Length: 240
Image (cartoon, rainbow, N blue to C red; front, side, top):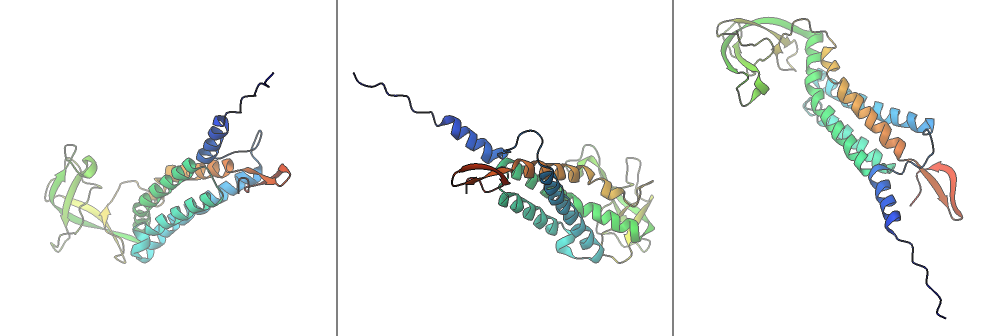
């Protein structure tokens, strides 16, 4: 009698497991992740957040255009994404962290400029020459934008939205803070603003980037494989 052939195992479960490992990371541990993975993720994320914000602040303080415009922060975000690729984190998590890093790098220049103006800015009164924008405006995020001129009648190259409101009319005085060294564009004065207020706006982006980095690093955990089979030695060499 012919022998019955056993059906070959379907490769689909292995394929799905491989895809999950590639997209979200293998996370080859049971229970809580090792403590050193959490530390590694916190250090990597903390260094990246600090570098992105610090480059923007340094660029605004010293007048370095490449740093003040956020380009240095973008480089730091790219370096973080490259690090996560090196440790073979899940591709989806690498992408999420990269997007969060770019968002933080793009938000940091405005906050850095506000910090510089809070530290060494001087407040002067200017005169409103025209008012544009408002809730119905296509651009300006619905803000009112004031064109102003200084005490000598020379118009400022930037339009002011802080302190410019619906009731503002041409000829009204408006308080504007200038950088004493001229490295940061002037902006309107916000009542009750604290010196560190501009950096507080980055807190949400920084926390999200830090959390995303921790998750990506933790899920990158793999068990090392030897010639005799898998072992319990921690590492990231599986599949090499």
